[in-house]
Structures are given as C-alpha cells and as structure tokens.
Image (cartoon, rainbow over all chains, first blue to last red; front, side):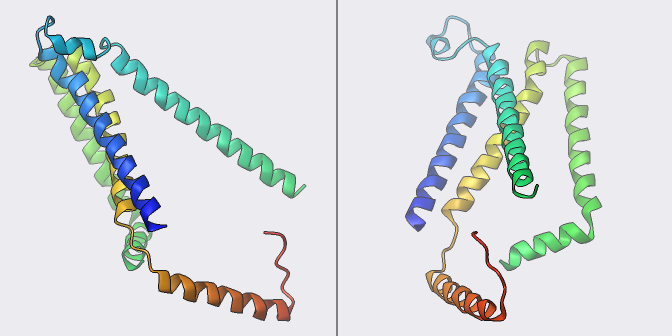
Length: 80
Length: 104
C-alpha cells in the first residue's frame, strides 16, 4: 500500500519536473539561441507553447464541469 | 494531523491575511510585467509569453507538491487496525440502538 503511494508520488513529481524543464527550455532559453542550431528540431514552433497549455486548461475545465454536473444529477436522482 | 488542524484554524480565524498576501503577489508580478513591456529590455514577443509561462509554472509546482507529499506520507498500520475495530464496535452499538445504516 505504501509502496504504491510512493510510486505514484514519484511518477507525479517526475512528470512535473520534466514538464517544467521542457517548457522552460522552450519558452525562455530557445528564443535566445541562433535559429540554425540543431536543438531547434527537438522543439515545435513557439505558437504551440501557447496553444498547448490553453488547450489543456480548457479540457481540464470541461472535465471539471462535466464531473460536477454528473454529481449534481446523481444526487438529484437519489432525492426526488 | 495536528499540523493540518493548525492550518485550518488559522484559515478560519483570519482569512483576510491570505487573500491580501495573494493579491499583493499578483499586483507585484503584473507591475513587473507591465514594466518589462514598457521599457522593452526583452523583445516584446517574449514578454507576452511570460504570464502563460508563470501559470504553467504554478501548475507544475502544485503537481510537484502533491507528488512529494504522496511520497512522504506516513502510514500507521497499527492505528488503522485500531480504527477498524472501533468502527465495528460503533456499528454494533448503534445497530442495537436502532440506527439505520442503509446501503452505503
């Protein structure tokens, strides 16, 4: 039980750290690098650095609203 | 357990302090951002990306705190056993008194 918790915690922190380094590299370091450096081929163009977080945020809000709606509907069904 | 109780009692007795702290931090960050926009130390296309980067950074930090908390969460297996026994005893006692437990 404790081991599964620790594994999930480690996975979460690993994902968060990798997202942090990749995004920091993308948004802050890459604009100051010459445009014919080889590292640019590992990163999508800069517009995606805005589109992807906004899209993820909207998706998160969507799922949150759907979840809340389902919970409200379920509680309304139980007490008619 | 006791630390969370202290956090929550502080939040209930003086909620204004936390709100004022958060608002001052937000005002400071927006002042720095507008200053950067005006003086153009960094090219403007990069300055526009900065708030989104800060939001992503905040989300990452929250996720990291959750992960670290999960990793350091202490389990007390003895207390868990005692708690299960307490629950069984309480259920027996209340069933005698006639409390209906329902399906959940």
